[in-house]
Image (cartoon, rainbow, N blue to C red; front, side, top):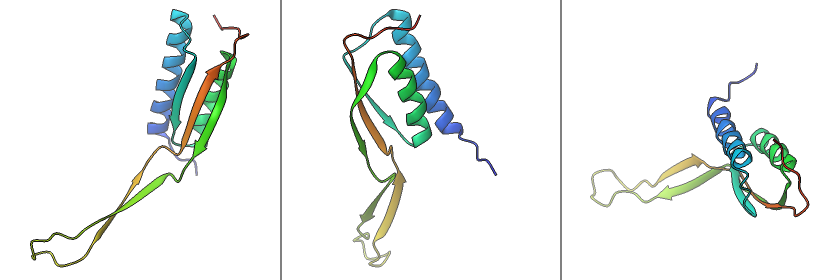
Length: 106
């Protein structure tokens, strides 16, 4: 059963919009830092940037979930149990650099 990637689709749209804006204005920064939440988002955006002459200079991956333990309240009412919280974060961090002999779309 296929799952809907509403938030992922929105992030992909934002990346594509930024890429279209660079092409329209003909302003291409030397380097770009992009953060992706999953492999599908990374693959699609990397292909679009590659077509503009960008290549991944460095790629870093981390666990998509960050867990932190919060200390128990010290007011004596709630007991002495620590609380653990887990949050989803961007898992793939890529620094792109533009190659000197690149061609642009448009």
